[in-house]
Amino acid sequence: MQNGNNQGEIKFKTLNQSPPRIVKQPPTDELLFQVYSPQQTVNEKPFVIECEAEGEPAPKYRWIKNGKNFDWQAYDDRISQQPGRGTLVISSPRNEDLGQYQCFATNEWGTATSNSVFVRKAELNSFKEQGEKSESANEGEPFKLTCEPPDGWPKPNVYWLIQAA
Image (cartoon, rainbow, N blue to C red; front, side):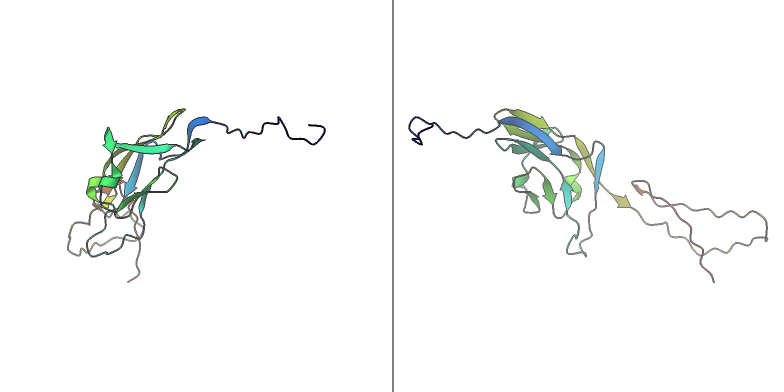
């Protein structure tokens, strides 16, 4: 108003309301976790399944596992959700955590859906017990060593190392 009188002036704040939009999510194929042996008391690397969305009002998050609602709060305290995000943190992964996971972010304007990701255990079995073998070779001629690598997931890469005697 020109005369400095605020009479009749209306002030209001606008909020840009918007449906959720996923900004962080798991990969589309798989995530691997490790299960530690009972001798290892602390798992140094918690397992994380990411889910984060933007929206106004801030979205609420829910998860499904293997096609069913996943109530992570019903588990013991090894599973938590990051504050203000849908990201799940599993402090001590177990075999039972294997499965297909998907996150949903919802507010009054809609729902956003993350990628669905298969979570599985990374495994590496031991080499089979074999006695020591001696092989002889002729200098300058081809020489073949065979190896039966252990099973594992993902499939292990095998490397040879030459050790001087």
